[in-house]
Image (tube, rainbow, N blue to C red; front, side):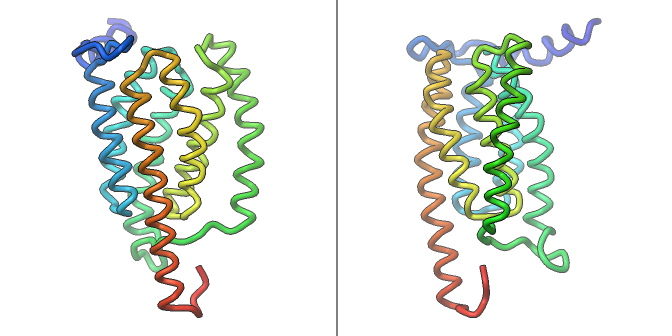
Length: 219
């Protein structure tokens, strides 16, 4: 049996259409991606380590969904996110000083500058590759991939500024998914955007409270 046939057999149940939402034929993959994505972001807002296993499940569902929509960078990104999810899970549990749990902190200026500068060549390179692979939206797919990778790295290391990168990515993802008739996924990214704003506020409040309690400790 060919590899493609084997993979099709595994993913076929997830591609079963459940109902129609506008112009979007909602499948199990999209519905379960909606559910696990919403729960995962809510857990991240609460700074709960369980956001990682829930996020890994979300990656599997969105991998199937995005591959079918010919958003190849988004599909490949789910594989990267799965690996980063395992890394982040370990980092939050054992990535702190002397193998203690990692604490919430701010990113320094050099880190943010490096990430911002890297987004440009990564976006350009992926746009070229995806255009040759007949991706349906090469530039936007590449840009959201670059922003999401930066955001995930900051999240893995529990740095507050991850929310700014997620917000920037969501502002592109929302119209992109609606344009591809993935209406339910577009709606869940509207929810993600709202939860990112909540997370930004919650993490800022935690950092401010810690600073007030221990003014001599640098964040």
